[in-house]
Image (cartoon, rainbow, N blue to C red; front, side):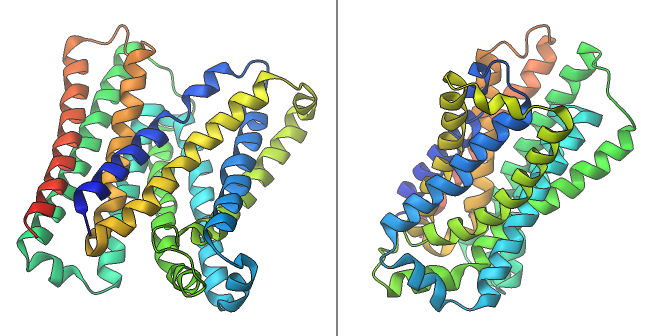
Length: 334
């Protein structure tokens, strides 16, 4: 186990996820649902299948050997995660990107980190050792950083006088639901542990053995997302978008590739983090927020915000970095 390598991989995964939506700016003339469908097929079907085939000898035999309850629970949790992503999009309509992202991500990070620990009965073990306590503190600090960044986003929206559609409290409730549902992805990884073990037994290296788990789970996520996109294509009469061959497909595929790359790094990190893998989700989400904020600065999304608001956001980013450093310090205390 090398927690420093694991931490570096988590940072790379977070940066990849936080950068994945940048290529969307290159998509021109397409409805949102058309872009989302294409990137979803790449990110949630093609790349997971390719990596699972490369990493797992006799993939289909491995999946066939796993119980139906394991496959179905992993798929269902992926479905719920995908539903959470759609709920988050609805929340943004009511309360804005910054606040919706903050609330949903905060719940996603905390639930995705702490619930698997409690279910596994490892909470007492974690608090009984110095490295365990340090890593739990880093999880709490990362959540604090997410909240601070969310406050900065709220201040920016207020200063911009952004008009929001509908009821504010409705948006808050939907954002909370989105966070709970999105946290199901971390639960799905835990539920898919028998798939991982079957892959290892079939000859897959432990570093890549999570790949078939992601494949099954993301099939659940892509099901609800593609269904939604097709319904919106029909409602908005945007099926014609797919006939326009060109750069839009390339940029949409790049969105999906960057998005899926986070799971390559995440899966590798789990191997190096060993018993402290429970902190992976929180650290990953923290650096995703860092990356998305840095891109926001690059594209001048904070132009016009007051100096105080920008300072709040910078403090939040700094707190997230401190959380990552503390996670690395825990490795030296082992």
